[in-house]
Image (cartoon, rainbow, N blue to C red; front, side):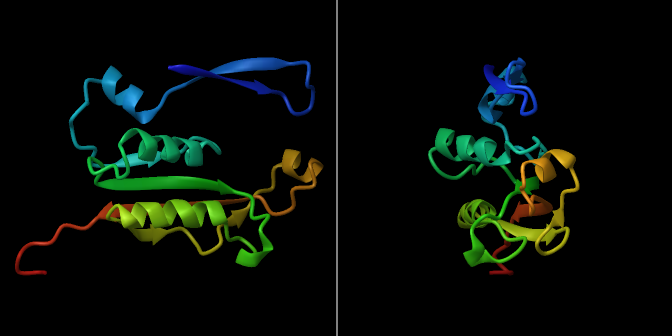
Length: 145
C-alpha cells in the first residue's frame, strides 16, 4: 500500500506515517479480484471521499461489483447554499452512487449529528458533522419491471 504522512495539528514538529490501502489493493491482497462484494462498509475517519473517488477512478466509472455500501461520512458544511448539516461533498458522492445503480435505502438522520471533539472547536470549525448512510443495488425480476 501507499503511505500517508500527517502532521499533528497541535504540534507541527511531530510527524507520523500511516499505511494506506485502496480497495483494489485490498481486493488483490485477499485474492478477491473479479469477485462481487456483497457489503462494503466504509469507516475510514474522514478519508471516505478519497476512498470512494479512488474506487470510481480505478473502476472506470461505476463499481458494478459492489452490491451494497454503508458509509460513515465526516463532513464540514462550509457552503451556506446547502444549509446546516448538509454537505456538497456528500451530495456529489450520493449522486454518483445513485447514478451507478446504488440507491440510498437508509440514513441515520437528516443532516447528521454535530461533533463535540475539542480539536474542531479549537480550530473554530463550528459545524463538523457525522452521518451514516447505506446504499444498495436494486435487482428486479422480469415480473417486477
